[in-house]
Length: 344
Ligand code: KG4
Ligand code: ZN
Image (cartoon, rainbow, N blue to C red):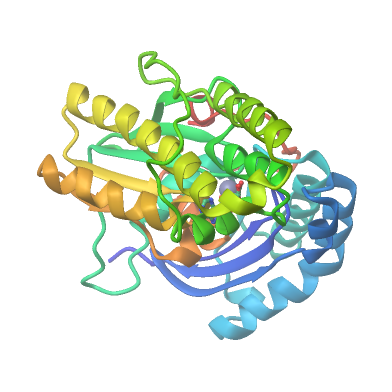
């Protein structure tokens, strides 16, 4: 019988420092330290993010090992996020993972952050975990990316569509900023939208363009709409906040699902997943599941802690790389623009 590897994984691509210990496809621990410092700036400040990673990395890794009941000498490999992400942030995780691999004389595994969001679906914490088979289509919606990714039988990933400009999460965050809601805006818009009328205001969604997405026009249409209304009534936003959030959110989600449904139907996928931080959105979760039921497709959404940035998703990707003996040399460097298709 093959030995089940114990892998330590580290995620530091943006503003969360995270470490996980995996036994094969099972999560033994998954520790995440967020960085509240960015809230008062209304967005992630790269320089502050890398400093916070420097402070957090040792305590977060120690806590992950402690919670897993694993000594560093029990580890079979060290995995880390190689990209895409912020250079200063990626540097911290990369240097730390390399020094651990060097000290312990264990293999080093570099993981693509966007690939990891998709692979989070394959975490199997229990023998009856509901994981998809392949081929599988995943809609990844995060603060920095919006992608439709296919997973083939051999677990190789391919992007079949992505955003040409802003990400879906960015559309949420930027619209929330215009509405003077606190950062990050997505959860705020979600909360207020629950009390609003999604049909009250109309925003023009982009024309379908194969399986590509575009969100910058939508953001501008909200901005112009608000400027016009506020010119007539300075209290327009406050009076109509819930309906604006509900209508804008409804437009984003209808558009995301329309492209996903087209891509799945035209390419014969019957197992569809949702990944990334925006998958926490309540309307998206509900309507995604409805869309899958209507088409008789199986739908998958990983538990919330594996949807937002976390190291367990790096660990599951690393497990598949371990099986392929896909290791990195110790001169590996972070890559801010690492692409899924080129990382395999
Ligand atoms: O994947 P993630 O945690 O970080 C990366 O960007 O990699 O995603 C964060 C994004 C932010 O844009 C945030 O506003 C959005 O996910 N988000 C939401 C919700 N929760 C988080 N967007 C809409 N509704 C939510 N409930
Ligand atoms: Zn992410």
